[in-house]
Length: 516
Image (cartoon, rainbow, N blue to C red):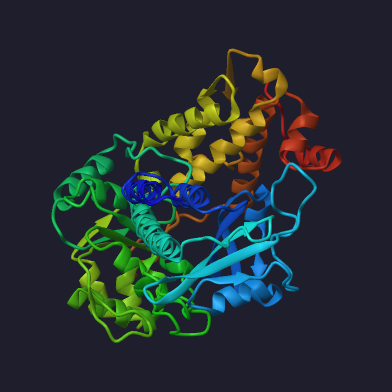
């Protein structure tokens, strides 16, 4: 290639470094430049990882090459290239098998490689992978200009390094833009009850500050969504929000996950790893299920919160981080502190601004607003027309105590929608969800509250006739299900999970009389 043509190609490669494209696109364009500058039938860029060379981009090779993994110990040519800090060329009559034999795309039956060369790419002094060129005709690479080749190799290494940096930045952006509900991209907090208005007001007060927030509440109340709202209303809204599930952190890797590790810190640490706190630098870190964090990690987390510094496993270097901390738990951390299961100093660091998320049973008619949102989502997911609740179903939702809170409501309605989406129902203008579709057991009407003996001066409640109370509950449940099944005894027995014979014996024992 002439000097002018080579210079023009270099300018194009340098321009690609600042262009917006994925790492795969960068690598592919790089190989196209390579095949224009130097005579070859095929080229490949492979990353070295776990004793394998993994193809990231190919030109002139069959597509299935990208799905292959070349064990270095099984491919002597690749092993020689990887072991050298200079370009390596193999003679046309070399008896070493070529890893690409049979993989080069060609219009004729010639499938064997007859000229092959490659070079190891070094990033920050460490072998990153290899660049290979292959030709079907012997002597193809005889007249390659060594200076042009070395210049191209240097630009290839720069491209690889730039792609790695951009990928790291893109990873941080993904952390910032991803929602904490994997299926629900709606960030709105649905509900108009007094307790929800109070919660939204608290969020607006604390969000613009830098205070650590501890979100408290039962399982399924939406603590993740509250954390997300705090972040989105904060001054860090345009920065990352990193999610950490402390309950899913095995104790032996928790430190590495939170603070990162250096290459060689332990068996399997084949490269440096950035921890969650470092990824969250400048933004927010959400420590979900903080009550599950092992005591051994609590002291290390406390040090980070106090000093604003982290230290990667296997490194003596202190790294400054500027992170806003939001934590959440369904545990009573004050009781955990008293029991010695949670550090009091860490608790006070996290609970600068404690915030209680109300349970669904405390939110009144909010349950119907949430139900509407979930039914709308299920309409789209199932491809059915309007889903609606009848009055008995609405009353059951309002009366239910919701131990699983919003998550339980969402799952219950998803099941109900799926069961209702029968072929005949799909043809209707709308589908009505009756009580029969909701697999919840209504609580006994006018059930007496459970009393605890407070002191000797408290009057004892009247004795309860337990057997009659249970019998009356069974009668009510049968009556509701019988109505839902339009008086069909066999269908009612199936819904209640009873054998028909046992069901009729139960009716006889209860002296049950169906309503006319």
